[in-house]
Length: 303
Image 1 (cartoon, one colour):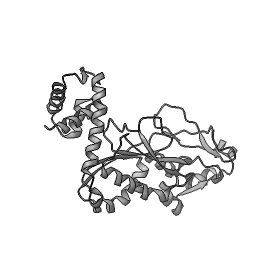
Image 2 (image 1 turned 120 degrees about the vertical axis):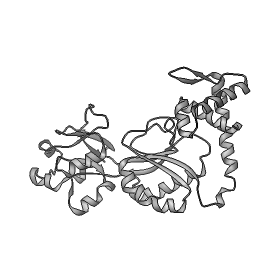
Image 3 (image 1 turned 45 degrees about the horizontal axis):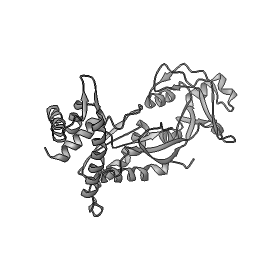
């Protein structure tokens, strides 16, 4: 095993704190990962990792070596891609994550053209409502909708998704159409909570005069924890939902869903491309992120 490969294995183990996960991600036997670390430690004459049955943690020397490894590996990527700007095809594996709605309504319909242009590129698309751990789960980049938490990751803001309040035609025929916030007292909203058991904030609405968000407690007998169920429940006539407009445009056009209270929409949701903090991303990641930005921009607003 060459030196750069061993350094790459070490940085992966340091990031993931797991020999097993690194072996799975790199398609290597676990013994090869362990041997690479032992060989590096023998070369350097110092221990890089503390290993127990439950945990893998860098030593002080390991932290210093880790930072230098990241720089060297990034420089090697730069060197290998020095003349890549004249190439059009991309190769290798790309792992990305996004919400179910973005994958279903925006990315996957546009993806055939991108993959036809780069047939040697292997793309793994994860779409889930939970927030993945970009580093630990080996993602090259993720598309995040909503406010970002402070972290060591880099975020590229793309814009905002406008939201609408809507209900099914059948629901409104049974319960009437609310025209004021006060009228919501006699209506049912469908609660969306990624973690069941938490308390719903109620109906969200944007106050443009103050630039703030407010919430109105509302009745609702149904709570769901994923966006597909959220939309399905609304289509079934179970209550009012608040969703990005791009995901329900076809239902609004056919009349299955009807927008209500347009003057009291929820705040637009920020959309960001998030990736690991490193000086130089691989060319395939750079080009994919640029492509994602180009296809998603038409669905976004500036605020």
